[in-house]
Length: 268
Image (cartoon, rainbow, N blue to C red; front, side):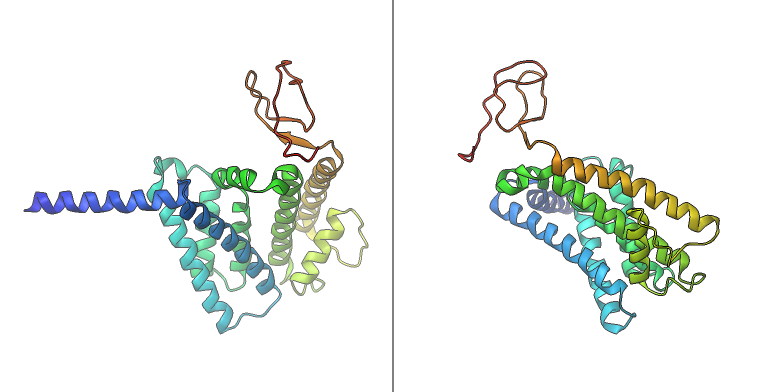
């Protein structure tokens, strides 16, 4: 009897795992819709983080914190459930950003400091390879502008993260940084090297933060400019050498000369 119950439990667990895996990895309509819903949830989470960073804490935002934390925890648990290499998951940066985000939503470490940790949740946006493949298949706009979308996303994430760092490290020591709007203003002026000088970060820590914003910010701006100004490329793997990016009107692969047959969707 114990053996039968054990087999039933094992079958039940395997069945649950199989059903959840269909949602996260399957090509069914239900699975595709579920993953798009997760993407929408990630975007809503980012918007919530940004919006509440400008508002004082209250009962409504704290209740929403818990709600977001529970949903993210459920998503994180489901991803571990369907993973074929669970221990390997903990070597990925995105796994630890999710853990930090969950902790900050469900148990803020020091009041508003949780807001700084939650912003790491933005790093999951557009990092799911299956979702990327689906968006390339479903959206002509995404296929044609993938590099620009990634460049904009990376720049936006950098601005949000650095704004949070500036605010959390300066709010108690710098009277010029009174809220997230001040921190955002300083981050953008430093990132663009405009440097109006009306807000500055004092001390060694402040100067180092400013240097990081300038160096990485300029790099991300250059990447965005390159993506906007460079010739439009399409993602199409060369059958011989595997080169992924080609000109939209390419007939031969630039790397090996193989004749290509790139679908043009009738828009040439």
